Length: 348
Image (cartoon, rainbow, N blue to C red; front, side, top):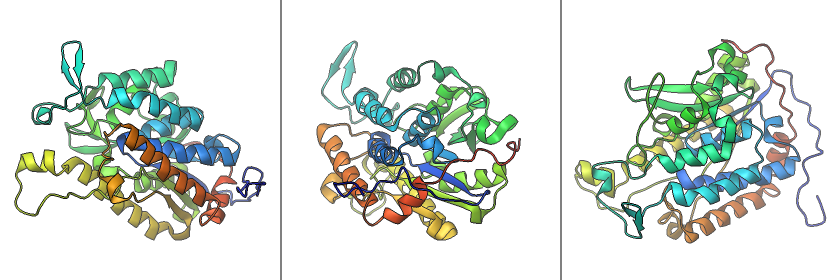
């Protein structure tokens, strides 16, 4: 430890079996991805090297997909955190529009006839954050990257894979299209049309992408389940529970008042986390924080306020402090691993 009692992990040496693969999984959660980025920033500081050198595969859904792609392209976690704080207010701008004028009045019935938010601010944020890399194809991304989405036309889940994991079997979508696809949460953003289909948020099938990531890593890299380790980072947003009274709500009540989309994402996330824990046992670690009821009530995935930002910082600080406390040994094992690259050419 250093003089302040903080665990120093960057110089740790850890010999791993040649077939062991380590996966970083990042959940979806809208602006709550700020919590994820803060935790990753602390992990990267402790590792003293980019997280692409720590993890063999990086998987993410929705905002987790954006963070995962940025890490895969060697963007520092601190820069990702700053980008979320910078662009979040524009992406989730809840003011009512009147021509070029934006009024600080929410439109509660907008979700009945169109998506709550325009895709334009999100597209702009992607272009600013990734620059020229926003135009590259996933089939040109050398780092192993996984992002789930759902094909609206076929009703089938789709797993977007980079060349670093799937080789010739990588997705032919561009990075911008892939990020807009995995982030198109129903009722929040419009479906994203791109080559090969119309896509909606991967959180509908894998808001916590652990099981998808484990399956694809085994399938594409040829390793065994016993050789897989997973570090998962949530968004301090699960579980999502409605405070509305029981009864027989109709479609409108489910979509608007009861938060059907957020409930779906939260329930899927909890199930995947539980199942992955059973499969991997001590080889699985989930970093997340259960917010106090007062904070949880104002932390929907589209809540971008001073209060929500402060709550996410507090939650991340508590989680980060545990990295040198209750999670010390497990974090040391994860951060001392060195990515090996494909054991053999990725299976197409």
